Amino acid sequence: MIGVDTNLLVRFLVNDDKNQAKKTLHLFQKAEKRKEKYFVSILVLLELIWVLRAVYKFSREEIIFALENLIAMQVLKLEKLEAVHKTILAAKQKSTDLSDLLIANCSVQAGCDYVLTFDKKAAKNKQFKLL
Image 1: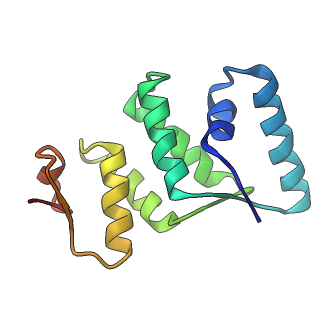
Image 2: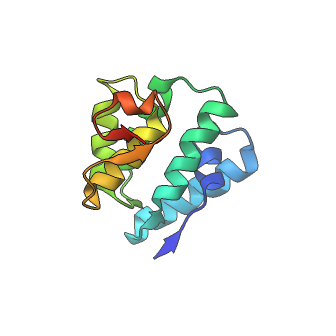
């Protein structure tokens, strides 16, 4: 299996560089025909959330929609898929930052009771505790 970097997913989702977006689309189409998968690490997803929000000014709903679309793609194997699913479900019900939700759900999936933080806003979520 081969991993993909954040910039491939950004080009694919945003289509801001037509040439790179086309290359990524062709890569995914070939993989689909061959029944191959590309690995998307949790770090890539965290960076993707940040880039979509900070650089491309995507709304929360647009980022959630993008994550849902990535999950649905047969050519992508997302790390910690259960945590990503839980993050999306929680994001639709809570206002906690998406990156914080992903961090919390990955930590809980790894067996943690909660995540220690100095972030007062994140600590409003029961998966966080203020230090």
